[in-house]
Length: 397
Ligand SMILES: C[S@@+](CC[C@H](N)C(=O)[O-])C[C@H]1O[C@@H](n2cnc3c(N)ncnc32)[C@H](O)[C@@H]1O
Image (cartoon, rainbow, N blue to C red; front, side, top):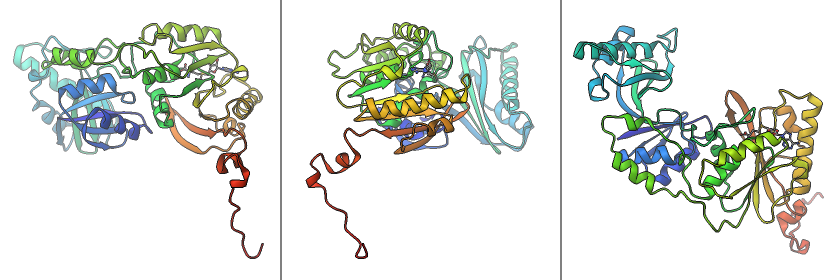
């Protein structure tokens, strides 16, 4: 089967790697999608295991169409009775990139009419639309005159992990958090620190990775469970094969800290839904008082962007963050995601990498600061300065 994993801008390559690791074939990266082929078992596995996918689609029909009437005609050729019962509820969502329509939701209404007419003609009644919790969710993708109709096997987006009951004011989307962790190249075998952790999304996603537990271990429902061809035994086998215990021998620390005691309480509440044991230590602490755990490690933080703070306050916060990296996080790679580019400059360290990502609709920079232990010279040439080779001198020097 040809399958499509949807993701967010910037995470296509890490999603491709995740799919390859799951054994997917013909894996190809597109714009906010990765296409692949596999069977039903892989479709179920992808829903449980992919950390950076928003949804997994099963395309059922692709066709060219001339105009609105033609679109209805082509939709009507789909045998919807093979896909759903009249007692099912349904909805259609998707993306439209075409000058043919003034309103991007219009093609979904045309599909709704085609489904209603199909069932009315067949059994005298039509299935109901349920935009919030449909049992069958269609995805319509239109690019100019080409339409692809798919079944959304995930149903609710896969960032609905089932563990987060309570959040702070600006929580990261779980898929974004997992994507940032994968983009950082963290090995999931060394320390992880988030000093502005809010309700704990980054430490929780890190702890799931470190324990080899699928991101959706606590999720209760998927769209494919309502399909006519749902293979319950296959799904149960996929779910039961997934680890659901914390590893006993983690020899590194995962720490989330924040000044706000309320959000730390929420973070502690959130992990109760997950089999993570004591993997994460959540602490109420200003980042200025945080210490790096011994050994190698990485820090990823999503500090405030400044909407509710004065410019001077936000500048000071980022300046102090830079000083904290220099003074306390030696030997660590420190990553910061922020949409406040002026404030990012106040860190006053040269980033060794910059990646553009989106946090919701906000375009953000995700910047890496490598904090060397000792001086940069020692890092580059070794602690024994005598072993350092002098750069070749130009004759004119
Ligand atoms: C954008 S939110 C982080 C949201 C978090 N990533 C999540 O998913 O819930 C920024 C957090 O930084 C915290 N914060 C602000 N100043 C801080 C400081 N000096 N030390 C530690 N945390 C701080 C805030 O309390 C807030 O929870």
